[in-house]
Image (tube, rainbow over all chains, first blue to last red; front, side, top):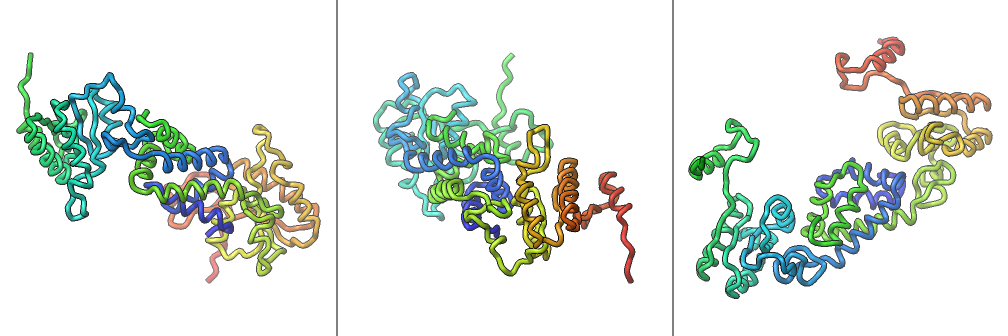
Length: 200
Length: 200
């Protein structure tokens, strides 16, 4: 407890940030008040603007302040190829690292019946509608390589099959720069069974 | 660059926090928008309230939303003992860890002529006025054990001497739980020359 109520409130509010404990929150609060008040004001406005205006794209469910996000409205992108991810940050990661220039569908989670997250919560009806439309020729399943992610991918690939759409899954294997000796067994087994022919 | 302008602004604004780089800022922004919008709103308001209302105590210069802070107005505290620190967070640290129940004076920095920080910027006139008042019998110099902190402490102790007020400095030595082998030479020399008689 500091000697100022507003300061205590600020320190407490900063703890909503992931990875920020009581000590970091205290350091942040003092830093902002002593050295960067314009930054604090700017952050306050940016938070308010974002919370008030950022919703979900009605087509792909990613975070967006517009009804349809900038990726879905981009005419240069290939609307016949759809990449399905769990979260908006995955869209960013794939768009930055790969040459994929199709569209995305963001589940905002994965199937997890015990937590009450079923197909409805993940917008599967919206996804099915798009598959039904006939414009999509290929879906790329880029859910996480976890049990829930695999289950979700499996569910979607079955749905895609009903509409005759081919589905691919991101390859599992040894990460670049990884050393065999430190790779977990599951990954190594995947990498081994998924070995590819060397082309000379 | 994400696909949302407001999101980019939020990620950028989060970087004003100490220790937060581009990746952490991105993680924080997505976390807030996907999982904790009430927390984000609360943080926005707390930041605004703090920036608008927290100023400096007119008596001790610490951060406070009132003209005189709660420590300076607390009648139970000993007004004859004044502890001088560099920053408001030092007040917190000393109040939490020691049984000191006197008053504080917060310099909001240390003497650093090259950065244009002289006695005026540290409120030395305000401090001198309080020493002149005659109520203070002892000052405790708790500036940091750096070159600038020592210089500042020296400056203040000379000022105190003019008014016949005794000044003490926090002891330097080996931190509790520290191992001799890993202590830096300067600290060890201080600890050695400041050795104290063992009382049985």
